[in-house]
Image (cartoon, rainbow over all chains, first blue to last red; front, side, top):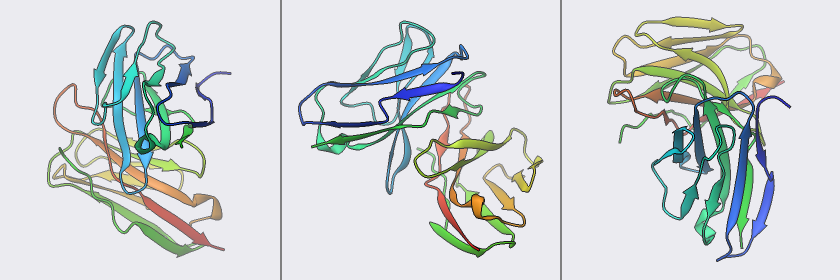
Length: 113
Length: 112
């Protein structure tokens, strides 16, 4: 399917476990982003990537790791999950740059127990 | 950092009514965008504005980039039940590498 897909849609994990959220886009957009969405905070940028092998921190990067070995994939790893990382995570991509419209995936709802 | 203010948090309107939403900031922005999020889905881009004063329509939606570059509004005309959702504004602060800043969103409810 064309577009941007996230997997899994739902995940429950235990505190301290490592978990990876996947993001795949079929457009070959250069820019990709990870956001978390929490009540009262809106969308907050975790990490972004301008191209394969180029990543940079966003507003709330602590506890997260990203990689981008291929243009189409941008996985987000929680190295040791904490309850405060319970959230809805959105991946997004942009064809033209960081200041243009982003296309979002459908999100992953992560619960850390 | 630069913040975008959207208020109120929730709006309730009757089907068929028009509704206007504002997004304001104390700082200037180079780009303004409006997104809509349906329950259980990611935000979807409705309108993008790239120039101060720009007025753009997309069906029943109209948005404007404020002349001062510190605000934007979104109008929805003749609302229908599927307009229900969360409406976010987003803006790019000055700086070529500045990422989008998002407002906290307004939840719109439409009474049939």
